[in-house]
Image 1 (tube, rainbow, N blue to C red):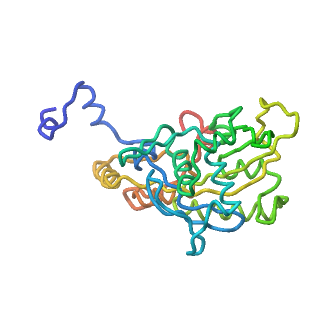
Image 2: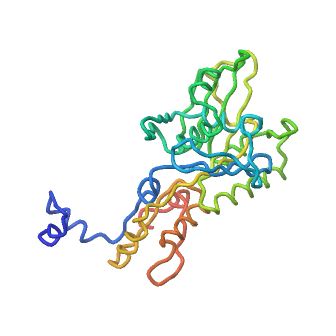
Length: 302
């Protein structure tokens, strides 16, 4: 305790020193711990098109480009639809005042709000145009969130966001420049490949979809498991904390192994692990990525 106090660390409970001294493994969350607690939409993939988004953080400054050329998001029906789904199937609020950006809610959802703001689409205006009548909150089991809204024409529409594989499985068709078309096996394969491309670049990937509700269907019926229209993919960046890599190296030097726990796709997690230096053990041997499904099948000893 005296040595630690000399370095500016005060210990309230003596047993804490013993616990720290006997630590051999640190299991750490990724978002907000190894990365800064902020997300930024950096790319959208719509019908085979990749649209890059400039700007960082929660300031609504930036624009949209496709193959190096600017894109008018309001005039691009597909892009405007994707941004609208992201904003309305969302519980985050972002305020800008006195040169500061304040976020209330999940960083991933806030990034979707800011991306729409860059296109001139305001959350308050969209919510007034498409008032929400029902919500199915995000659930780690279903890996999706769904909201039901009333359209300006008096109909009801469901907006859904979630993991790409989950929404692809629930979709029967897709939105394209030529209109809504059937989602074929080949289309599903292409979407999965585009998802892997984004995830392999260390982007967190979300899928967006919608479903027009039949006339007379109850607004309480929030079934997002089938008949969805797949809209596209959103890739987000979450910058690493500058001090994280050094802290992990220090722990390794002390004989402490670091394990990253994240809800990201495995290919995304692998890329981030490489950047942090936790993809290999002290002998330089590659470490495994263990999926939660594997853990549930192990007995306590394993």
